[in-house]
Image (cartoon, rainbow, N blue to C red):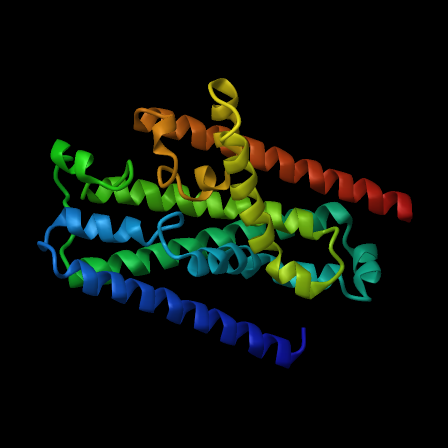
Length: 269
C-alpha cells in the first residue's frame, strides 16, 4: 500500500472521528436544555446510535467500520503478487487470518466509538445510574436498552460491537469477488443500505411469521439491537433471541460466500 493511499485513509478516518465528535457535541448541547439526569444521558446516547443518527453518519459507519480491518487484506487480494503470496500461504490460512483480524478490528473500532460517545455525554450531562433499573425510565426510553442504567448500555455496546464485527466479515467476503479497491472501500455502504431497504420493503408486504424472519435478516437487528422496529418483540429475551438468530444467519452467509470463492479460485488454478 503506497504512502499516498495510507495518508488518504488516515485523513478519512480522522475526518470520520471529527464528524462523530461534532454530532455528539451537538446532541449534548441540545440535551443540556433538559434536566441533567441519567435518563437524559441515556436518551442522548441512543439518539446518536445507528437508526436514529443522521443518514450521513449512518452511511459513513457502514463504510468505515468494515474497512477498518479488511482493507489491507482486500489490497493484498487485488494486488498482482497475490498468487505468489498464496503459494506461500494457502487460501484457507489467508482467509482465516483475514476474517479474524477483520472481526476484531471492527469490534474494537465500534467499541471505541461507542465508549467515546458515552464518555463525552456522561461528563457533559450526568453519569448513568449504577442502581436497579427504574420502570419509569424503561417507559420513557427511546429504545429497549434506553433506561438510564449503565449495565443496560454496556450490554448494548457489546452486542452492537460484536454485530459490527460480524457485518464487517460479510462485507469482506462479498468484496472477495470485487476486483476494484475503490469499489471495495464503499461496498459496506452499498451492502448495508441494501440490507436495510430490501427487508423494509418486504415488511410492508408481509405480516406474521414471515415478517419476523425479515426482521432477523435486517441489518439493524445485528449492529443496533433494539434501535429499530422494537414492536416485533416484547422484551429483552426476545431481542437477544433475534440477535443470536441474526448472527447465525450472517455468519452462515459469510462462510458460504468464502467457501464458494475458494472453490472458484481452485478451479481457476
